[in-house]
Length: 351
Ligand code: NAD
Figure 1 (cartoon, protein in one colour):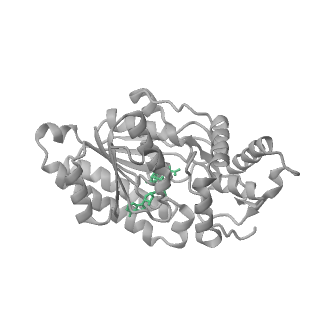
Figure 2 (cartoon, helix red, strand yellow):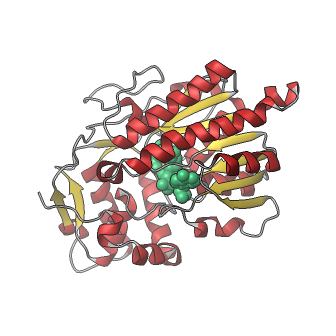
Figure 3 (cartoon, helix red, strand yellow):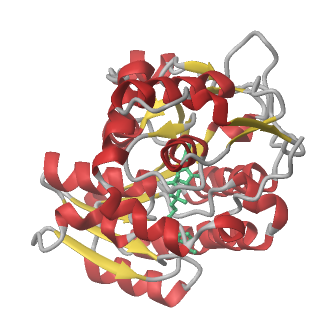
């Protein structure tokens, strides 16, 4: 199996590349522009393997995408490259429109040219998986779950750009008959997560004795999925999912942000007892504009139709994640140094 993974130096993309190479033995071409969020060190364990190649290229570069696809001749393309941080999309949406919308369009067109040139059998067997987020569905109240049929209602420039890219992927399937599948997943956590996101930020700030910023009152609910469960789901969806369909991915692990932060503090207090409980470092900060109240995924279709189940529950997953950060400063240390303070978007106004 020959697979192209875009965004493979990112958090989820690198988990996917590691899984496809180490567990499945596939030939993988990682394409990544290595933006601030891309990190080659996340692929260190597959470095030098003869079934992995890495290409530093921008998905908006049509010629580069056409050349890479024609040269590698993939059976599958798994598209994860994106600008992914909601806070950054609020202060600078242009990169999000460029990569998530224009980049997805460019990649779809390059893939379509290649797919059109395949013989009938290869054409039927080829798959393109567009990887997206549950944030396209907007916000839930206290009840209910996002289903594949939930109408799109994005709140942030990030989720709006991902919604646009989902529509492009679906249109390329309906209009051109390309074998495309779309997945929408809830919030991921786990190793190699860039330190600007809530869970790694909390772990690393708590370790450094710095304030732990929590938006509003910390009541916002997210449905957390361990990243390796997501990687496995993506492989199952592209392998067995029906063309033209959407599959929601989620671990049925709903947590309020404040409870996530408290849980991390408790795990750290247990592993590395300090003078005072790390919960004392929590600081409530002015809420994010347009902050969605609750996300929760109904993954029944993926579970029943394709037989996927999340393996990790949140309590064990968060402990594994905290331990990973404690043991892997070689990975996050240089990132923290390079992108501290403002440049990481970590300067929160106090509430
Ligand atoms: P990430 O920010 O960690 O990684 C994105 C990767 O894409 C980086 O390596 C970056 O260098 C690369 N990239 C960015 N712009 C590029 C461009 N123009 N050309 C080539 N490469 C480019 O993101 P992530 O959290 O790993 O998310 C991966 C995908 O999964 C995204 O499409 C995201 O929308 C989706 N998703 C993320 C989550 C989550 O909780 N993180 C949940 C559901 C879906």
